[in-house]
Length: 308
Image (cartoon, rainbow, N blue to C red; front, side, top):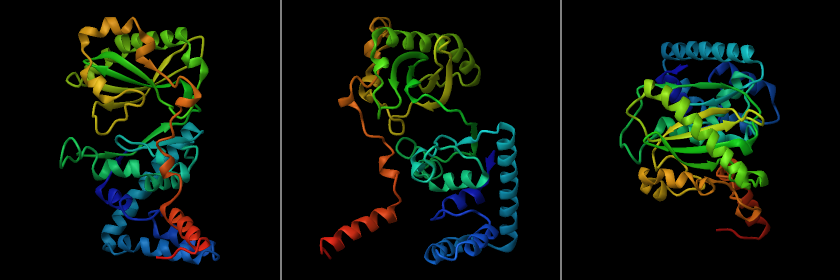
């Protein structure tokens, strides 16, 4: 669904609140015991309220249409949606939506407003590599919710259309069966066959010039081990996490070595090898709102009688 500049402006406002004044007023009336929070919400919405009435009505009509589309999608799919913008999802909004599953338009808007990853899409998506770049259009993307086995999510690195590396995507957990050499080989063979026989054929019809790609995929359970695409990312060193690889080795990889590397798939299918290798989640820093972190620090100082 296309998003207007007015809606992006709303997302870029400080604070987490629904776009309609009516919703804010209802919230104010419904919780009389949280006046401080209500005052904050009222202040955070003032910039939107300053818009001309004509612009405001246009914006509210856009929100109404967007809600209708979201609700219709939710009714059709029934089990919720996963939300993202052009490139990024709100996985850093775990503190407000631990499962990332949205079952209402309110939850969709809250996730959009709560995520710094999503904010990066509409503020500086490629600021390190393409200065001053702005996409022509922003889109709200809803994906049907599925309960996935995180162990079977992988990040795949394609250079000139050839698979050169596969990394376990959930690096915050150890899955013993992923470390088995036979299973490693199975993972490589399934993904390599999918890339060569299906993905490259379809991708060449869509974008023949872009051949260096980072592909996030999911593999179904036995016996089929069917490969599904989760996401397609551009090969941008500054924006994409190489996970268990280093960008230097991926960048320096020579396609002439591809056959030799494939013979040792254990080296190029990288997983967490033991419990000591588990990495902290890259979203841990986002799990608590900043104001609560500041309050926690303040209370520690009070208890320790430390004042500046």
